[in-house]
Amino acid sequence: MSDRSGSSFALRLNTAASDEDVLSALLWGAGCRGVETRDTAGTGSVLVTGYFETREQAEYASGAVSHLARAEPEIAAIEERDWLSEHRKWAEPTRCGRFFLDPGDPEVTGSERSQIAADEGLLYLSVPAQRAFGTGSHPTTRLVLLLMQRWSRCPLRVLDVGTGTGVLSLAAARLGARQIVALEVDLLALSLARRNLARNGLAEATARLLLSRVDALAPSHDVSYDAVFVNVLPENLGPVESIVAGLARRPLGRVVVSGVPRDRESSVLERWLECGLVETARETLDDWIAFDLRWPA
Ligand SMILES: C[S@@+](CC[C@H](N)C(=O)[O-])C[C@H]1O[C@@H](n2cnc3c(N)ncnc32)[C@H](O)[C@@H]1O
Image (cartoon, rainbow, N blue to C red; front, side):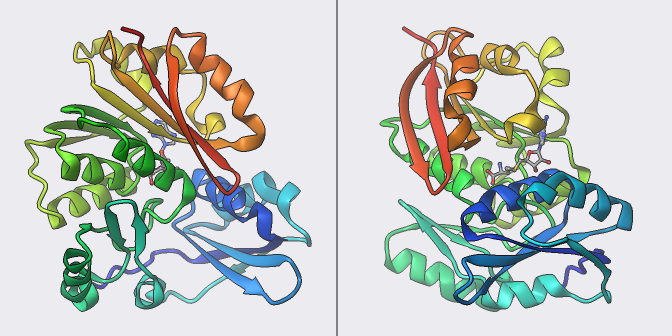
């Protein structure tokens, strides 16, 4: 596996360790192709680097995250190098309930790690670190994985809004989902998702990938879903709650909402409940919260 990064501008900034997750999510939302975080010992800060294809993107992102920076952010042109391969060498698997998510290079560590997962009785997913959000390690992803594992029966039809690298669609398929539609606005992420689905043996007949915003899809769509996953920051998603809720089957269809910073939990939840959904469960991790909502019986 030798993906080249294609990234040529690095945005570096120091932030409080407690702000790392929010910062990283904002960088992904601003179009970065990779994020690295390093501890700066004893300072309570971390050094976060986001990689961008153009200086304009890095400058835009710098403005969007400057309120989280402890010092002036720096933008530097970087030499083209295969930083993804470097990253995959040290990226550790994430265990999340029954899932074992492997961000490593499938050709280097894949068989060894899938054996470890099998020995531990876990469901192995290969999601190599790529130029899009979604190796499964981010708290917002893990929250959805945790909520879906609480269900006594896996939904057969799933809509995955903002699929990134396809990790939630893959997980749903491992649990038994039979018809999955995965939406993404970023063409690159979509092509990575396609490769991930194929790499994990998911047939195209099971999962359809669409380049679309959810509000563009809805008007012509006459299918409803047993579960809709939405792990997108509220400011990137926009006011689409009633549209998303309308895509969940009535009665009892679920909408799992993640990507919600805990300090905005009430305002975000209120908008979803106004659509008529009810909360059945919630999970929190670090500074993030996710809600499992469903249409009443
Ligand atoms: C936080 S990532 C989640 C990725 C993956 N679902 C996961 O849980 O790891 C959000 C993804 O949603 C995509 N996105 C952002 N706004 C969107 C929108 N309005 N409709 C669909 N996808 C969107 C982004 O490109 C990004 O890949």
